[in-house]
Length: 305
Image 1 (cartoon, rainbow, N blue to C red):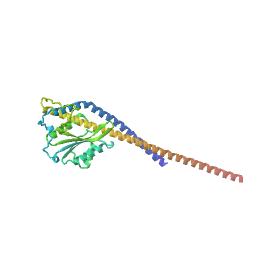
Image 2: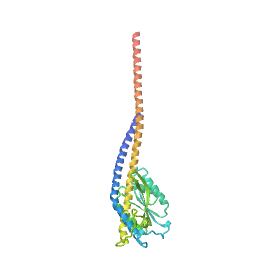
Image 3: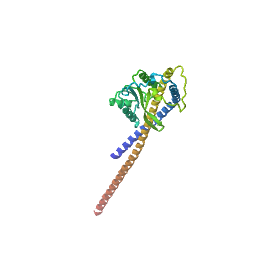
Image 4: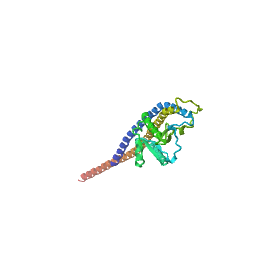
């Protein structure tokens, strides 16, 4: 009886857990679709802005200098100060989503002698704190709610640090959505700009020379902050969408495992219940037989008298 009760309690517990995992699956699905829609709404503007910036960079004279395009080749590679933005989630239960980004970031930092680590996401913050890796700043409440104002604030801070020569290069480690069903961790260098975009073609179109008005510096001062903010925003939203897709996969896998376990427990329950019923029938039959034998003995005694 105790074995049957134990199996039934386990089945009840699994069914309760599956209600939670199914709810989390639906919530993550809704949030992922919302994130994709937000990114789709802003992509045309930032894509056009990227084309404008590349056109400006390609039209600049070779001797043009700008703080945001300073490659700082005069600084030894070992002495360059690198800033790394690591984007993780605030919560777990997302499969290998956080693990892959953290491992890539940790491996990257091992190759830098002088770096500053900037964190997005509570999971990453706790991970590096446990390993005593210093964190320069945490961008709080950004992982679960990526917005353009937050991306602009991050971009402004990074550009100020670069312009004041407190950092020489800027990288971001995030999770990129390769397709609607696949994602992978990725590293992108964001600063300096000139090194990244010197030979980039704009949609495969032939390069054209433009006269820049009022001046290249004024144009870059206007375009680069918006471009960097847009790029950071797309990285944050892609990571957010990838996190919820990974959580959907994890919850779907948990639901399937729960169903398999329920099927096994149901089979065990039925076997135990059948054994119990068989035992009860056997006991009733044995009792009836004993009673019949007892009645026959009484009858024989009465006949003998």
